[in-house]
Image (cartoon, rainbow, N blue to C red):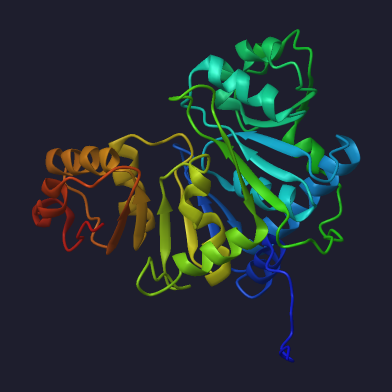
Length: 328
């Protein structure tokens, strides 16, 4: 006997619809390094993801099951790509900007990426590799950066905001199979060439639910999460999806990953949670010891990527961090 319960596919699209409506006032806050941070509501993220999907499909000819590569920091535009590509039926392909040039080139060619969305501040890394990235036909540039570095590029260069301008803010998202590919990333080539890993819509949905469980990160719409773990590193541990599921605000550091700006972000924006590898927290603790700041809002820290040193867990931060307590 089968159940009489509703049976719907568990897709990234459902996370986007839920987050941009039920939690439409929650925000992605992107640090700019100068002046006020950029603030974009989840409702706006949903609208701009739709505009990006229209641009990818209509202007760049992205087909179903085709990868859309990103070479980006953690920021609002990267979140938009996180949803636009998989929800339209394509595949998000995050490129790890920390990998050696030869591995990056191999990965792009192996995945047959035709489109790369890149932050302007990273053009110095990407531009020299483009002649060897034979599959790339379109480069979409977001944010400030020296466009002259792309002079003479074989690929066609587009401005992110110009592609989105005038596009509809709604998209007829297709009903996808939950087992379909939604995102992929490649391992580093420590044992031969890098290996591709493909996430299904279902796996992302279930992982987002696990992240939000009380015995995991247990975040709610009363929280703000400082997402330092890169979006190109196993989907930032699921946070860009889990946050839209529960309405958690995301504080995105963009390229400002040094201890001093991170301390300023915490003091200014008052996140309650943060996620990063141990070296980030070791640097931040040293910064706070040298220059104390009020980071008492930070009640929970998620550490991964490598084992958290006992000294980091045990070190008292009361003098520099108020009541903030690092945890694993």
